[in-house]
Amino acid sequence: HPPASSKHPVKVCIDGGANINEVDPETGLTPFIQVAQHQLRLREAGVKDDLQPTLRMMLNSGAHQTVPAHLQPVLEDLKREDDRVVVRWMYWVGDRVDGKEKGWYDYAAEAGETVEAKFQRWQQSSFDEKFEVKSGYFTYKVDFANMTQQNVDVEKRTERKILRHGQ
Image (tube, rainbow, N blue to C red; front, side, top):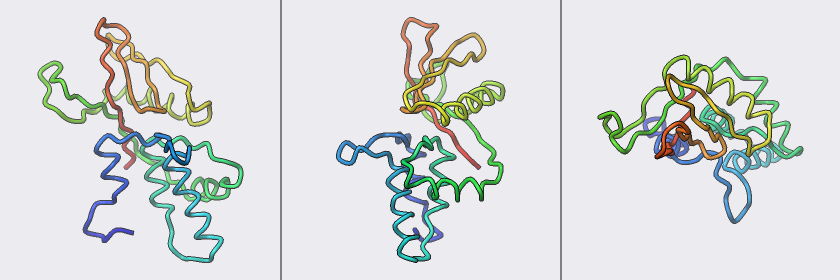
């Protein structure tokens, strides 16, 4: 575990826009599955170190929760201890659209609720499924596996990073 005064390395990556569902080309595994495997090895060895807060942070940030059967006990432990998390959805602006400065912006409340409902459905579905979400005047194709959204109503079809922020 990192010192209490420093920011968690996984959190730094997530806040920086890293794709929480990126598959490691060498192992073929997502970061969530890699940390879950490590948690299982620690548990089997009787080590008290607990990676559940890291796993919970990853889930709250958009990690897909489909895991191999041997890791189901780790996921079940997380579900048992789950308190209702307050979630914020955000999107990245780096092109000064509408005069916005570079940075993360909150979804409008209704759009955030819709995206969260679609995200919950996605976590129970196939990893590659994509969803369309209507927000204001526009429709967006949301790709949770890559944590991106793309406006399908405009010619440019700008793709933006999205972030699920659990509090």
